[in-house]
Image 1 (cartoon, rainbow, N blue to C red):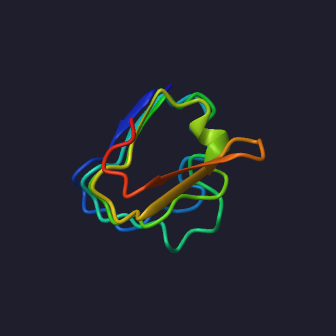
Image 2 (tube, rainbow, N blue to C red; image 1 turned 60 degrees about the horizontal axis):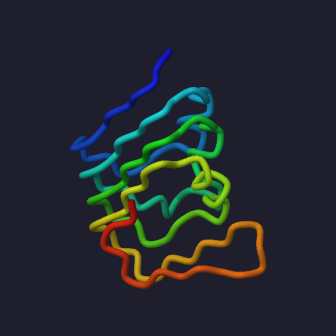
Image 3 (tube, rainbow, N blue to C red; image 1 turned 120 degrees about the vertical axis):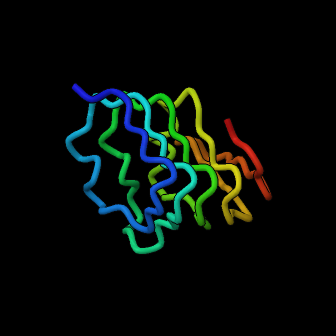
Length: 109
């Protein structure tokens, strides 16, 4: 069973919407130092089925915004690295009416 996936520095530009569909037991994904923007994907995260994901590194890409459903994915994470992307405003809602916003994040971990 695959538990760690490291695909950093591969010049990846896109990830298929269902790329991680069968990796429900994966605990760590590193996609840093690529050219990912996720702009061609629907509003759902490609990590939505990774129920045991604890560490997600998406640093040094071209990401401008996060997926609407990331709050469900984020709840299980111990570490999330979005540093050195093009995110200007990060808004996260956790099933409560209050919202938390982080402007110009450099590192969220």
